Image 1 (cartoon, rainbow, N blue to C red):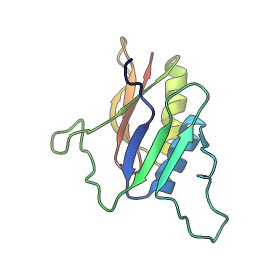
Image 2 (cartoon, helix red, strand yellow; image 1 turned 45 degrees about the vertical axis):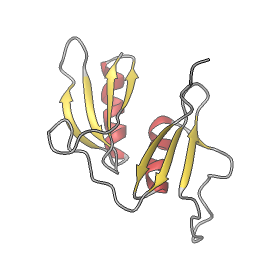
Image 3 (spheres, helix red, strand yellow; image 1 turned 180 degrees about the vertical axis):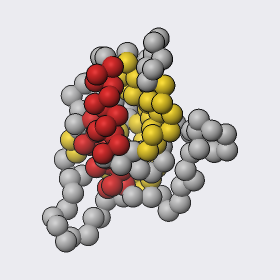
Image 4 (cartoon, rainbow, N blue to C red; image 1 turned 30 degrees about the horizontal axis):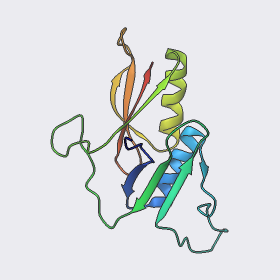
Length: 134
């Protein structure tokens, strides 16, 4: 028997905002009970889980402080990053625009690489993630 990955957990200083970023970016849905509260009500959750039909769930854990990664620059290492793929360069451009519109920061542009076009982003909490043609 070998261990199986249950979920990927991202620490963040704003669990709801980061969960919403990834929910919209990847088209995920909240685990039952983790949905946003009604407008104007406090959010009691400091641990949220997003699920999809064919992948590993993403969880978000509220923390008080989190140094932002500076990767790929030296300083603060990436600590963790997500690799995601799209089928072609047109989809890569669409994914880039969507990520930026949702609040990602472009950290590295290698979209003109003929072997493996990619973008490296930081999510709104500073976690790096890559979108590349796979």
